[in-house]
Image 1: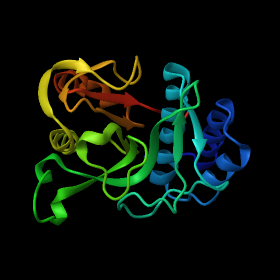
Image 2: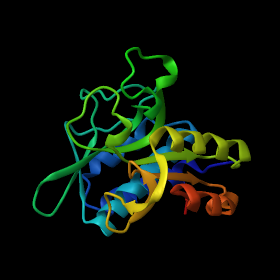
Image 3: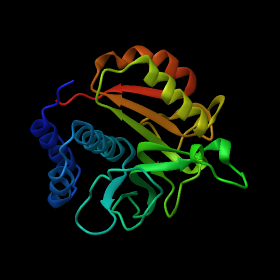
Image 4: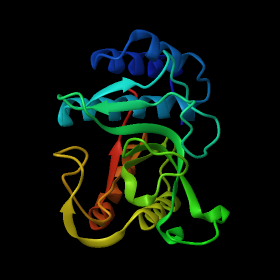
Length: 222
């Protein structure tokens, strides 16, 4: 599925400038990106920050330095890498936004020994502030998967597996958000999970998503 890299990078810059992010942050974020998948991840990151700013009144602030780069490999939280803090109107840091971080799964909670399958990556994670290492499943506010490809049914199975490692099916309960991406989810802990794709047919899976607290979003390159 082709992606106009220049157009996508321009979209990222426009979105970040529109929510008050310093120009050098957007420039640094897009400058080194060459693969279609990473450029799309940057675009979805910008859209997530925009929605949280507009709908949740949370201002994204770059934590340290003037550059944000997307990691080439997943791993634990590393505070030597820049990340976004989400700050409310009173100046309190409510959450943090990380890219390419692995969370600690529900199935590994309390285990005496950690195995490779006990951590799963999400392209974008919104977590409680102040964490280190692999954030535990119950500290995740929002996870986002970015798919710049035809959205196959196998990907549905993949994200349902991620959902199961974040939470248990439960009667609807309030999330950490007022309206976006979801005010309530049928999940405990009450995390939100988004799957974003350039493929418009992703919407056909939303009925499944409704049952498990997943949102499937078509995020094109405008």
